[in-house]
Image (cartoon, rainbow, N blue to C red; front, side, top):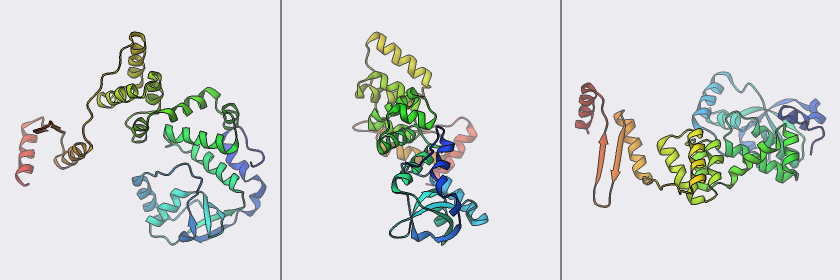
Length: 281
């Protein structure tokens, strides 16, 4: 591990490079010679944000060089994968970069800590980053908490999210529920109960406080969460398509032998607009 890694995240990144600050020469490197960081915990990048960054790069160029490490073939990204991806979208052929000398272990640590500093990191990505840091540096929860400037209970609570069923993790990644919802659902212990209640949370748009109260009442009464019927994905997809096309709420329901499409309108003018749209189909 790099010497001098401080307790706070801010100092941690600088400390990784404290032994080679003098070699910060900005070079223009070919984008095709640069690979994503193999230790990057994050693999999903919001498409719209990348497109916006690409437009900015078209107008102003890349304002902050990316950081890379020389590899057997070309370079590996240490920090700046979003800028690298957006530069490709912008049609650029090269990018300003600083080539750093570091070990694979330092590169891994940097990627994890840099990932933790992102403001748009969701709870599961944060938890996964803590897990990776602890695993690769052989740290206990207390040691990780001390190194990152966090409390041990905070680290422990975040790591608990990794025990959620995959379906609930997907809800968190899709921003349908929060990490706090996920931690509260863990109070049910039974994965099937967690899934059943998570469906209700999404359908009825419960706050974390509402969920906490409900889980508390279930633990007191011993009741089981009621199963909420889940709409098939193809119906949800068609609902979204119709909503976008018609500009109003659309509900599709289907039984074994028949189905129904309900189109919402709130005024005579909106009704006439929808009729006009449907008559053009």
